[in-house]
Length: 375
Image (cartoon, rainbow, N blue to C red; front, side, top):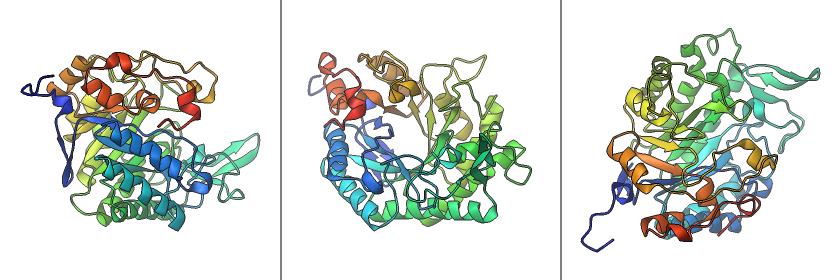
């Protein structure tokens, strides 16, 4: 690109809270299991800094569990509470800023998806909308009002800490079959109280989380809400069967203080509803009136499958970037930001290489990117 040639829209700045992103590309949140006892290490800090140096506009951290006794569900994932973990995250965000990037943490509660016996409270039952029994043994306790209130407070505290540490916003994880999503989906929520039954009731918990988060952060601190139709154990699940149902979920969340939605799909090019070619991000933008992040196998020739991470399926995928198609989606107001997952996991410099049209230099994705923190 010559010096007097205008960069593509995807490589122009985009407003984000009180600052702006240097481009429209986002590093998607991806669990790494590299933070012993919930504390992100110096290696984790180098990993995130490398993506900032690689040119990405916004980094969303891997899922970080909030300060609720049974929020964590997996080994060596990072916490977003407690002195040691927050000190680790301070090093991470400072490094990203030094490299010219912006970063937000994704705050997370695994809910009923929690692996029984998970640290730091292995003796406690998991928490979710319903009681859950496995082979006759209870693994999850249905949350009562006190449990719900404590979880909402923990989300709010994590968001407040994020702003205090100098992050550029916060993302609430409401997707993929974790706690907030478990309340949203009628396949996991069979309650008969104010948190179950109707779509309005099933949205109540998410709404309370958003309101609590919005109340403790400043007005210019962006609140992002990530949601999905699909779950880790059910690719065909849906929280909204029609655009009208999607609006019934997202519009109240937007009114409550969500600034951006992050519409998680496994393939960003797939239509969200019958009778329309628009994907979930485009529909989200239309019904919520808010800017949206699209995501789903960007930059690779193989769609995401959970089996890639469990090694039940071959994860290897080749780089495949149709930059002009991504650009056209922005120009057509189908989405505002584009999240890149596995491609940027394998190559920290993915964004710079795409911007410089060095597509043949992009590293392909393989199993080593899952096992190591590539820097």
